[in-house]
Image 1 (tube, rainbow, N blue to C red):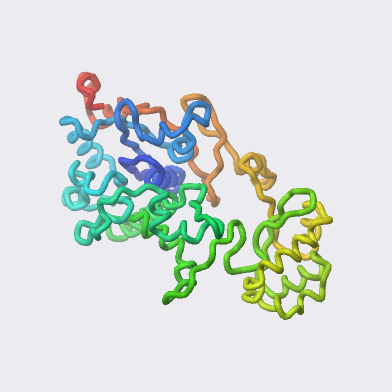
Image 2 (spheres, rainbow, N blue to C red):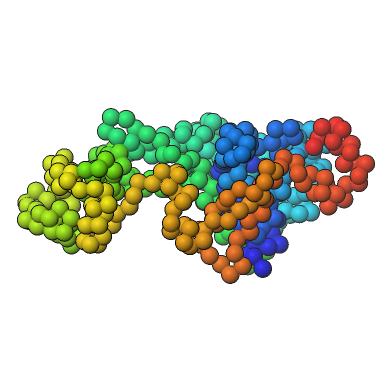
Length: 396
């Protein structure tokens, strides 16, 4: 039995934050019923066509779900939503615009009055607590905008130009906190029988993840500088070129490693006691001079030879993998981390979620738009004639 088998999640979701949270619940065996707009669905379905005509974001975040098309603004939608939530749902998740779920009759105060065991998770850019909305509650919030507001962009990039993270890190952070909070709420409900409301803010999620730079800049101190792919406050820690044009990523964490690095990698043991470099904060201050010494030492070597020396010295290192490299990564392959999931265009590769448990994760297909609509409506007791009428009226 999978950990969340028997738990049903009803979700009004789009983009990344909520779909990523609910996909992880589905990985653990929860039944996830995804409500989508008839005709177009979750707008992430249209982001690109990179996975044999399907969108990369959507394939990643929506496996193992059921797709129910429903025009939530249609006059007949309310009865479908009410029956679905009251009869089936243990958890309701939504990342609509602030206040939209309440207007649809899906606010926690109304739902919990009729079903006290229900857990409702609201995900928004800046928080949607009706009792403490804050001045930013109604601002539009996309991943890049939250990366900026949370200070993440200010400490990411090169000295000349700030950069965003490649993945949608604000959405991912919010999705992870939604997922973990829902799991905690389910555990608490198991003890008390009562559900609760969970209010997840993308800003608060990413601000938590940016907490080390925040503390580094404590009480008005200078924030960590933008240093590209190098670590801002530990050195040497980052990419260095070898003589064959390749780049090697390496990182030192302590003084024992610094001595070994000077002796076995740079083959300049006297450098370990150079007063410019005898502590990490000194090496950070002298990073320009130290970088030149390292680059000069690596110039006669190939990348493979540099890695060989690093391994001998037990210095942490890594290749700078491309996306193509990750698809074929020998460690992922050796650990059997790839499987397949079904889609409307046939099976596609999928990475098993991190972690292991006895029953293994659920890895069911990515749903086609509205694929489960009729089956779910029939399960709720709608007759064939009623289902046909809902289709005819464009309610579903």
